[in-house]
Image 1 (spheres, rainbow, N blue to C red):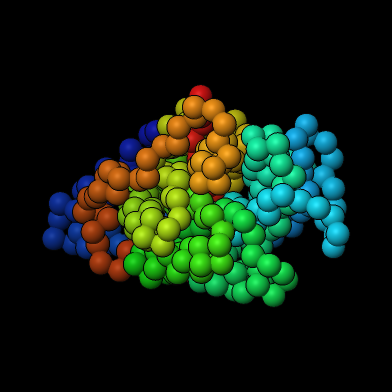
Image 2 (cartoon, helix red, strand yellow):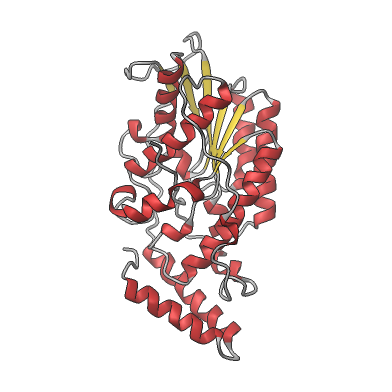
Length: 322
């Protein structure tokens, strides 16, 4: 269960401030963060349940998915890449999975038959994207559109902001080179995850926002469309965590995944030229990467706190649309 009481967070931050004001600030703050990283690993549950899979062909009207096999017609091929957020980790039924929601929404918007294929893997980081794309080429022709959700596991696995963004950019470039339209949901805002205690949560948030900004630049440079999850949904999760998070307060609920799909869908339709109404997509992440910078976030080797990954799929945050 997450540490949510304001008093406990205040005490943690006050302790960090006290340590920072003394000559032993570096050692004291590092010890505090190490302790909290250990606590977070104990709080966040470890589970590797297989998310529901519902690859197949979707049509306007919301009918049942049609299993795809050679000879079954479709108009658009949508492929999903990334981590557990892309697989819909924690969903109980297939219709809650973000890929399914996006495929159904695209079919409704375009009136076309949309084939959904999922290459995303629970626990993946940006290092795994190249393998997922290799699998795409092995199994058949590339898709017309690709949605990528990746980033949070790169923070917890300490893969480095620059290298992680560059790997994502390379993946987008390969997909674009194959002819696919590419939309990317960037790193979420760790600040909404109360299962991570303060001030460690602020450190993770700062690093995550920096990664999101770097990802957005790399995606645009490679010809893709970045969707800034961190900038757009944090207020929604903070206002209604009991609705948008699952019971463990770490993974999204079905409602949380629905918000992710709702944000990604307009960007995807616009990129495909299938947007038939006046819905506008939000601008890419620009301004928040510098927020939360403080003495704790600037301590050297802070990233080592996440060196031992929790082994848990990272959560997603995405905005609601009107």
